[in-house]
Amino acid sequence: MNSILLINASGVDKPGVTRAITKVLATHNANVLDIGQAVIHDTLALGILVELQLNGDTRAHLENEIEQCTAPLGIQVRFQTISHDNYAHWVEQQGKTRHIVTLLARQVSAAQIAELTAVTSLHGLNIDSINRLSGRVGLDVVKGEAENTGNACVEFSVRGTPNNMAALRADFMDLSVRLNVDIAFQRDTVYRRNRRLVCFDMDSTLIDAEVIDELAKAAGVGEQVSEITEAAMRGELDFKQSFAARMALLKGLDESVLAGIAANLRLNEGAEKLISSLKKLGYKTAILSGGFNYFGRYLQNKLGIDYVYANELDIVDGKVTGNVVGTVVDGQRKAELLAMLAQQEGIALEQVIAVGDGANDLPMLSVAGLGVAFRAKPLVKASAEHSISTLGLDGILYLLGFRERDKLL
Image (cartoon, rainbow, N blue to C red; front, top):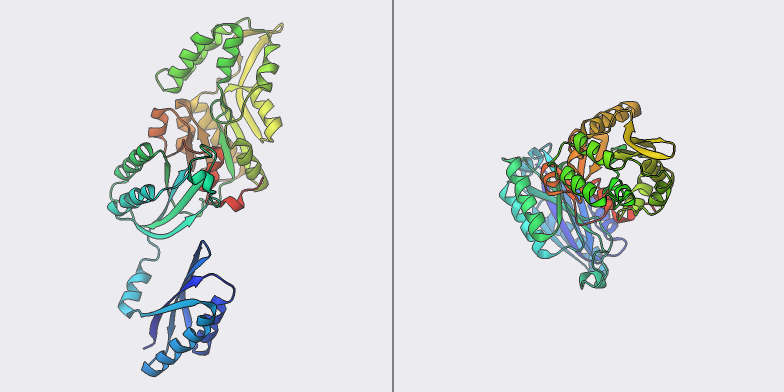
């Protein structure tokens, strides 16, 4: 029976290490059962699992050959025999359910990783691989000299099925709050890197404002409308009722103020970077908003967004009437529009991403393959499967598995 040998090589990374080892293995007709490597700060860790015919003499000769060819490269090598039972058990793990745990923060600390991995272990999940998706971190970020400017992301590929998914998510939510990080937990499926459509809420998601509040300020009723808006976003008021109450307060507003408000809208952090990257990667994008078409179309032209569905302000003789034209875009309507666009694009709902911050975004977040609550109200954050509060919108690319070097400006 052939032997199974695990070869671990480590040292300063340089060209030729893998070639040197596999060239020797080739002379012994070795079959490669598994191979992997990681480089951390120019330090190499390479593992090769092989099957080959060995006896005492040939093994000693093989090990000597490998050590002789790697020593000049400054590489240390260790050898370990793997039993056939041990290997068979390893093979049986193939096909087990896999998940991706993504840790997002301004900077990553050992304490964060220690607590996150304690949770995964507690729930019976075994870590297969760990990858840093973000770019290399400058010391100014590590020392806190560039607060709220850095992006840090570490991705864990884990194997196993949690006994209690609700308890696992609750533990991750607790960590997020205590450590000021975001933790995403998602099934590792073919859809993860095969999303095709991203649907955004507009107000407080793509832009750092609630447009209806800005209109209200111009109309001199800002305080009343803001109070209603906040209650609606927290889920304390029915959206249609709150929307009608706010719209009534805008009656008589001059149409001329719209252009000035649009020109002063400020995009949320990471919005331009995210949408630019998505467009270059071939994704379709949409705004599905309980706000207004006028401002949605403004953003469409500015960012190159494909679809806009929002409310149409009713304007007569240059004045806002306090009504909207057509069907009000509420939470249920957003979910319907998302499903319609998926069908129109010929894709599955699993290939759709939805991003929003308010209670009226929950229906579309729940039907999308990946629903992300962005800097959301507590009720929304607790109800959504995924949330990002620490980083900007471009942090969504990490949830898709993209590395910093994959992001296209």
